[in-house]
Length: 239
Image 1 (cartoon, rainbow, N blue to C red):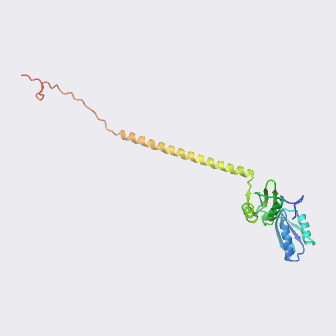
Image 2 (image 1 turned 90 degrees about the vertical axis):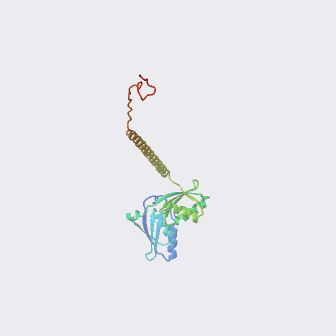
Image 3 (image 1 turned 45 degrees about the vertical axis):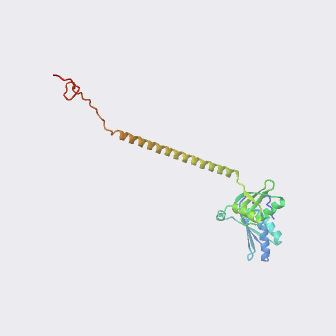
């Protein structure tokens, strides 16, 4: 496997390089393709036997790949560096995913890196045995990486969320809580206002009903004394 050296394009711009070399058979072409795909930074390797061309794309040092093709094929190789196309770069931007994986030893570490580099959508893999982490660069989605490691390697993997992403999540949660509190406050104010209106309507009804009660006027009549009345049996009788 080719290791990135000083001056390699790892982390830099993506380049496309065509290597012209005589390909004797399909087996020879597959062997070269297989070896190059396992190189750090390589994104795609296309082999055309009829035109005897090997097209390599990725964040790589073209000279390193050139030397590797010569070493594998043991034949004369011609290198042509193509200018990157802007339209192709915008199709799918590579992303970096950090995974928490139990790495028992350096052999486990290298085996896992090698298997991941065989994947078409994985371009580079960096590991940290002490921190038990893998940093994978490529266009493969994070959850698919986790699924692959679980199914093919039988290891448990977790996606490590970067610190700035955690801050964004916390900020989003705080905003949602604030919205809930504001909505609850508005609801309580609306309920209080509705209750106040009910009480006001009730009072108005009571005032309206009491204002139509007729006033009763009592008249006191002073009658003449009944001392000498014939109708009063207790009245005085005058002879």
